[in-house]
Length: 203
Image (cartoon, rainbow, N blue to C red):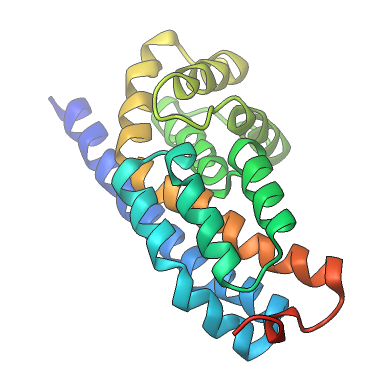
C-alpha cells in the first residue's frame, strides 16, 4: 500500500543523500585533512595511494579486511610505520566516520517514520554509542547497534528490519569512510607527532 511505497522511497532517499554526504566527506573533508597534514605534496601523495584501500573497502564492506591494504597505502604516503600500524588498528575499532553518519541516518529515518521528536543531544549521543557497538566485520555488530538504537530511542521492535535494510544499502559507502578516514587521520597524527614536513623523508 501507500505505507510500503513511502518506506521504499524513503530507502532510496536515504541511499542518495547518504552517498552524497559520503562523497563530500571523501573528496573534500579528507582532502583537507591531507593538505593540513602534508601541504600540497602531502595532498598529492594521499591521492596517489588512497585508491587501493578505497576499492578494497567498497568490494569487501569490511574494515578488518581492508586493514593490510590500508596500512601499506598509508606507509606509501611517507607516514611512519608505528603511526600507520597504530592508527589503523585503533581506527578500525573506534574511528568510524561512516558508521557514525549511518547511525544518524537510521535514527532520523525512524524519527520521520514514527513522527517522534528527539533532541539533538539524544540523537548524537545514541549514534556515537551505537557506532562503538559495530564490530569491524560485516556481520554481527550491526544488529547489536540497531537494537540499541531501537530500545534507547523507544521505537518498536518491528523497526529492526527497516534498520537492517538501511544498514545494507549504505554499507559500501559507510565502510569506505570508515577505512579512508583512518588514512586521512593518520596524516594529521603524523604531522602532530613529528612536527615537521614529514613528506620530504620519502619520495
